Length: 226
Image (cartoon, rainbow, N blue to C red; front, top):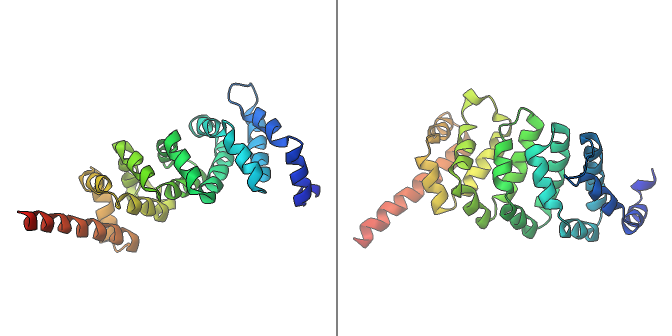
């Protein structure tokens, strides 16, 4: 296939294929979800083949449009959107900061409870990447619902432990901040994490151990400063 050739893809990009595809995903235009799904898949194909096309993509309003589809798309569109976001989150910290500031954290958190296992897993992958950055952790814990949702998903009764390791990775990242640790241990769903740790889950035990260590450090520091 001609598009498998990098030179052909570069030529297509230079001829404006990205701009044409972006028109198809503009939320205010009356295109079908199928057309948007195809356009999103094509954007992923072209934009991640070169740094220049990726920069062109980010310089447009595409982050706002992708956020719209996270909140309003059907599952096929959601998967294509998350595929783009997953790759963006792996490219640079700056893109991660941009997504954190743009409101992606709460949208991704909401998708962790989606019916589609694929959507849940991809949302957890992107969220876990975004929470590696301290500014994004601070933003995330400002809304208690975000953290409560993460902890609630660790409850076996939820039946949605498909992305458990990724969820625990996200919680571990949040435990790196003072506000995150405080909200974890005071959450009404903290027991879900504790029960998972008590059952022998290695990652859950690691998180609980970190929380316990920091609580002891806080107690000792108060004693020493008294």
